[in-house]
Each structure stands twice: as C-alpha cells, then as structure tokens.
Length: 317
Image (cartoon, rainbow, N blue to C red):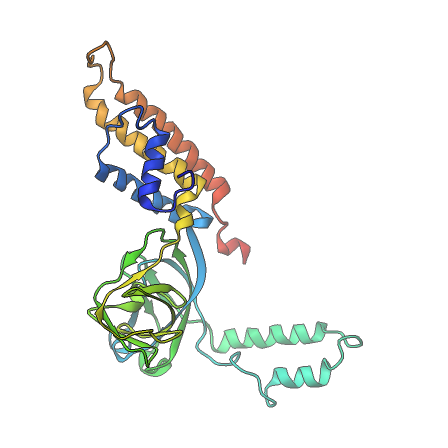
C-alpha cells in the first residue's frame, strides 16, 4: 500500500507515517476523515494538480430562462469566462470573409506573407468583441449557480447551449448520484427521478449505471442525459455512481499535508493531559506535538503556494 488509491488506504498511510501501529495515535476515525477533507479542500484551492480546466456545455431549458441562472456542478470551483453567444466562429462558408481571404490571399504560403492576414483576423476579432462582446456573469462556488447578466428573453432560447470555461476540483472518491435512473437498451437517453444531473456530473464523465460502465455524451436537461452508447440491458429505478480520480490520493503534497493535519489533531487531543505522568514514567506532551505539526503545516503550505500553484490567468493571458 505504498501507493494509496482509496480513502481507506490513504488514511492508513497517514497513520502509519505518524507511527501506527507501533505508537497509538489518539485520534478518532471521524477526526481523521475531517482532517483529510480539510487537506483536500486546500489541495483543490491551491495546487495545480487539484483542479482541471475544462469547457462545460449546458443546454438551456425553460426553467433556466424563467429563473435566469443555470446550475453548476459541485465540482466546479471557479468560472473564468462564458464564451460569446454569436456564431461568427462556428462555421466558415464561401461567403465568409475569412474564406475569401484564404482563397485569394493565402492560396500559396510559400510566396505570400501571412502578416496581413493575421492583422486582418485580429481586426475582425476586435470588431466582434466591440459589437458582440462577451457575456457578463456572476458565480459563487457555494451556491452552485451561474448567473448570466443577459437579456434572457432575447439572447437565449430553449435548446441552445451555453459554453462555460471553468475549473473543476479533482474528486478522488467515487460518489453516488442522488435519485434514480431509468433507461433502455434501445436508446442512449437516460432519465432521472429526483436527480439533477448537471449539478453532479459533466460531459465525458464515466458513470456506473446499475453495474454498467458508460460515458456521458451530453446533458440535455437537469433530469436527462445522453450516453455515448446505449445500455446493455434495461434499467428501471437504478442507481448511478461516478468514478473518482484515484491518483489524487498518491500526491506527495496531499500525503504530507494530511499527515501534518492529523498530527495537529493528535496533539490537540492530548493537550488537555499535558504534564500528566502515565504508568511507567511516560509524560504526555500534546502541546509539543501541536507545535511540530503547526511548523510542518506552515512549511507545506508555503511550499504549495510557491511551487504548487498555477499563476493567475490575468498574468498569463
């Protein structure tokens, strides 16, 4: 178990690193789980391996237009932008300006300079930003809601898509989706009862539906998803789970940080017995354990700030 892949293995690794079973670690199992959750939260916020950048696609429903916001999954911790709604870059036909430029000016890259073409493209992009702009939005990770400051009655219609650039926390645990699912082996569509799919999963996620491993193609609505391939057998009121990223448990920062957190909890538990002499002449020294753990935590956090964090996108473009 040198390479933990589950929470249980990770917990045992941290305890062994503190001396268990040679030394009794006076920390309750629930306290260990709490400190691991604290370490994961810090890992997601500050370590570049704790998140992944992706583009989330959401199909607009009548409910979205009525309430003027869309669901964001729990795993999404930040939204960086919402892609423009105009379709100027969606396709190119013979009447498109870019097509004509490439046809007449860039037919031969060996004899024609592409500098003028690049300048023209930048000018077209500037005009698009000036006249179309980018949608303004508001997002708070604690609400699971993405508010779009647009004219919902004009800018978006039922069935259209919103593309969101966001960062998602790497979830190491396999989670069970809420509600139940129903699907047949003749259709790729899965419907849910008391389920909000787009609050818990994203497109391309691998989910397990009543023992059948399937990949999500896209999310039609909060209660309907489409799979890449149909189910092998019919499912009625089935359950679904989403796989976690087990390699997260083996991250060296996370292992050291969670161990230090548990060590601090251990010292905190023993601090009330500081100075009490046990049978055999052993004296408990909880405050010293806390001080050592606090120094380790500060060192790891500083190292993660300086070496593990990605630079802000405002500086890298």
